[in-house]
Image 1 (tube, rainbow, N blue to C red):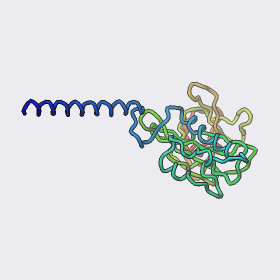
Image 2: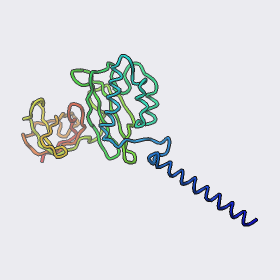
Image 3: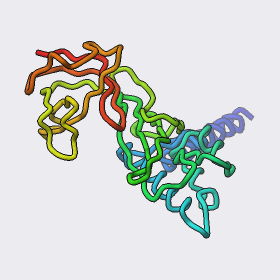
Image 4: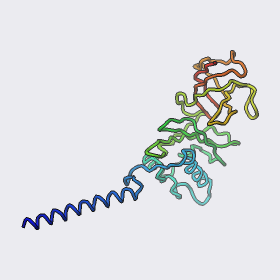
Length: 239
């Protein structure tokens, strides 16, 4: 009797070990991600946004299909909340492009970047005159990124994020086309590429609030909010 009981215990233990092993194998077969959890892409965040917006634009322009028929809102690289919002077709402003009139083309630009979050601004490409814009917020998770939310903004500028632009460079008005020499610009290096320019726009809350004391070529540290037009200056420290 004791021998039979021992044999049963050994069999049960072996079965438990086998089931645990099968579960671990299935977990790694699924890429180490539990079923139902948020999936992420290891592509560059700009590519992740492009992979949603470009097909969405083409389907929106089509006369034979639309993004909902194509199932574009069901991408696993969107948050669950965003996928739910994009399940049903909406009238009026497109919930991804954030345009009332579908444009011919779109442009994308990073407007905020941190270790675990990034925002990309998507606007109608010229010659469209619309100031409506879409802001895609991406969130870092594990070793990749997913699109957490899409917000529509009717204004000309991206949502304010403190110091989304902070760089050292030189203050210049002598700028190449198509930059406008009536504005001061910061000339700076970007990822080892010299000669990058960005226009500087001053408000009453900027420090200084005007650029009267600036001199051509002066070294400066600029903090502000990066927008489609340029940098809304928070502060300029001339060095």
